Image (cartoon, rainbow, N blue to C red; front, top):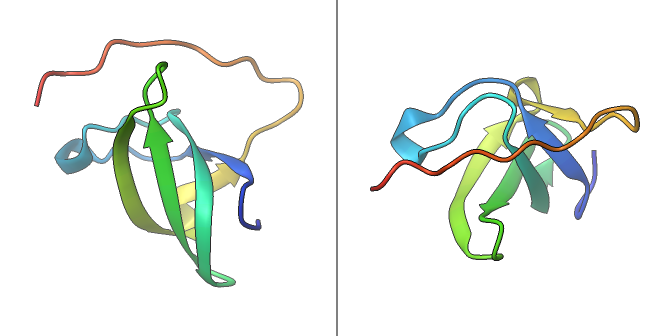
Length: 74
């Protein structure tokens, strides 16, 4: 995975308001196994920027479709 790739979160991160299946973008690659990932709302507002391991992410597959959910109020 590289910077600007769209990725799927493999596990929920309740402290960040994120759920498994949320889609983010890699904004910085710290190493081959550590990434800074930004998750945004439908209007483009940043919901969370988190540092994640490669085990927490997977590339989005070309045969997948995005899905929308409401954000919990924080």
